[in-house]
Picture 1 (cartoon, one colour):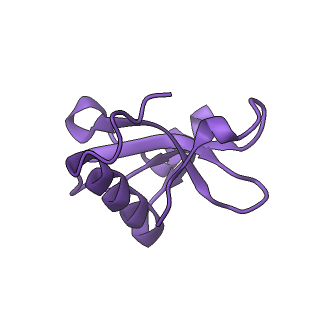
Picture 2: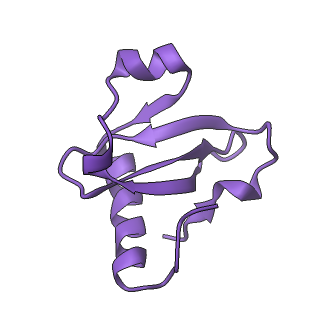
Length: 92
């Protein structure tokens, strides 16, 4: 899986998302490409640094809460990239 960064999208393009994978040491925030549906990574942060959003929280602030297999695949790949030092940082 190739991970795409959200800075490849235009500034006004894509809906903001946040992963919600309770067992993961990290979570991802970024934007979903409206043309392809691809999750594009903006920032990565430690799960203990945040309160995982509920569906109501996400709707209230206008972002998508991504769960299940889609979120698990993305988080696992980003975590692998970090732990194998394939990327220096996921900060934009």
